[in-house]
Length: 338
Image (cartoon, rainbow, N blue to C red; front, side):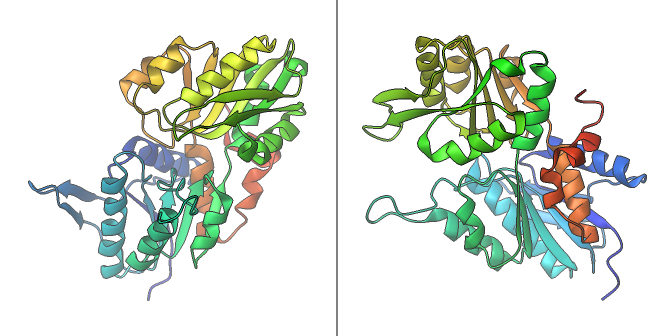
């Protein structure tokens, strides 16, 4: 097998915009042109997925950029079929770059006779021929253990910290980080520590899935600018309700930083009409014009951190170094002034 000389990127149709942005950032970091491998990922008339790679990939270090967002099943199948095409073309190593890992919310059996779909997806990915996974803010950290291969889980909180320091300059002393539920306390605590802000929790009780019966704020938010932190915003019902409860408890303003903007159903309308001043999401999921046109939704790029993570994996250097602010500042140079 020839020596692996350069990282090669290939993308499905789930988020071509992000894939091209990652290639551009890698070109900047490398000082040489990096482009997506020429390939076609198409569907027959009966919606079967077909993949053809036009370039030689024998012995190459391949990175497949493909979030498994809506439509989750189609995008997952694209990932698996691209992997199979590369494996059968004698690729040297195949890394799945999955900015948003679908099915992650099904990570345990909460009730009898239910699946652990996240484990099933992990098995499918491994069986297809993936040898490493790079992802962003897994819904549950234990999903890394579902894979018998290296999994690099990047975090959005260091990037969010840079964004907050930039947009709330001069107001940092008024900030309060809020976890929208008890399960997200660790994520919120991490961001609070980075920006040196206090932490509060919104305790919610559900009667049934998708409905919130009661919310209670733990901690004083009187006169504070609250920043709600979470990994996924789906229909935005819980998020908008939490913002209302915080305002009712004396918060001055409410902003939200959510890693993955699933934003299904009535989410955009709810957010637009809510008391939230802003919702900040990453581009891990490609958004339509409706989201981009929303006045209080803003998108933070992840291409810089993914591009550097891919280069670090390729050249065998530390990926965890990207969790440090001193490492991220140069990567996001020009986007945030400190």
